[in-house]
Length: 395
Image (cartoon, rainbow, N blue to C red; front, top):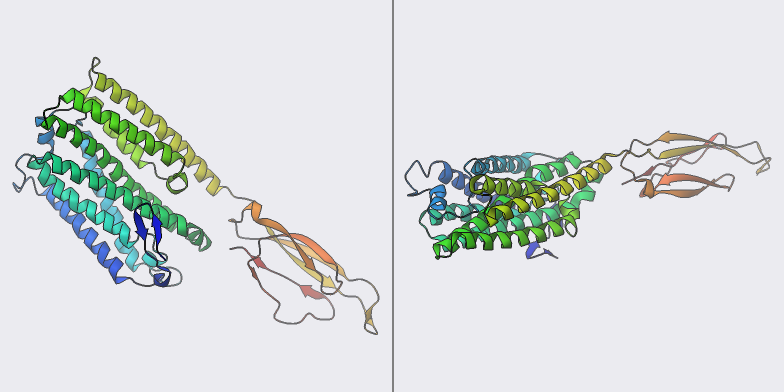
């Protein structure tokens, strides 16, 4: 049965785990092609004479207080490079194998068909946005940018849901490095792009209002107010409801803070209400980013904190001389403790286990990890110097 998450649907894939999925590979290839097309149109388009104005010149024709400084616009290049790394990771994962010789990208599928579908839509629409913006088709360009950042957030939601669903299995399989690569490379990279395109959307909206003969100061203030409300809702949900999904994703705050700083650099005037609004907004974003960063550090410290490994007790039962089938005295039990190499055991999951001595019929209490697998002795116990052992594995 498919699993719903927001307006995204996650496909059932238990039967596909550990197997190659041609449709998923095709989706990865399509998303990669659309990304390559976007790069070509950005790098070659202006020099080849495809664009008549250029992205920056349109903003100069309709100046607003949300316009960004040229230095900050270089973040586009950083985002494109980061997404290049994302696709290198995704393509390499098709050929990488797990310890069980299964393809990494489906063991389990952390980046699904829907994830790459949303990414492909965002790349294709961003390529179209370049043409619309250059031709002064402002209103369609605003709609395109809205769908772009919406698609990126949908891709993030799919990735969050998948990683949260499979995180326990990955930890049990000792594949935490794979989890961190998804978080650092993929989720933070897509989140940076989503945060940045959100800023561009409100910039486009302000330009669109000016294009419709609204005063620049008024259109800027309207868009700043909507943007501020949007960010407050985002920060509240990110730090509360969605925290378990997004606790290691910081880049949206960085993108928005950098963009607001770029607005101040280009449009600061001490007597401007909009400039003061942007300054206060920037301070608020930085405070939220600091709170997010501190909480992220706390989670990292807790995740890496080592607890005392649980001990596995091996009991040696020595039997006394048996006469006429009856023991002349009670057996004695010597216990030796060994430390487990499993440092992932939570102290809350160490429970007392009562094991009955099969010879003396006396209960022996010791503390063991929560039992999931128990290995029984392959051979019966000898009459003398009986050796009783039980190994309990924690999954």
